Length: 112
Image (cartoon, rainbow, N blue to C red):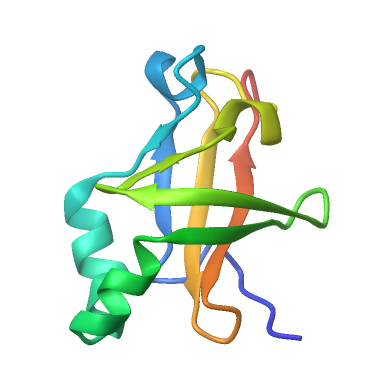
């Protein structure tokens, strides 16, 4: 098992959730520059096409898996239903090359 520290890993994507990340649209918009800097360089063109397909995201807080679609640097398909999150919370995502998916954690809960 590979363990990542999403709080200190230099390639982790950190994001404070916005209203549109937690409302009924059920999608998480990832900053383009962060994805281009931290995720896409790990892949050849075929690999980039593959990661834009359905992806498994591992929730490191609940030890559960969720199938999401990575599209235009947006994770869609039940984002809000799969992860109970609130505007203002900070999350971390890190590409795990062993699992070919993202590791996820809540870095700071709202009000903490």
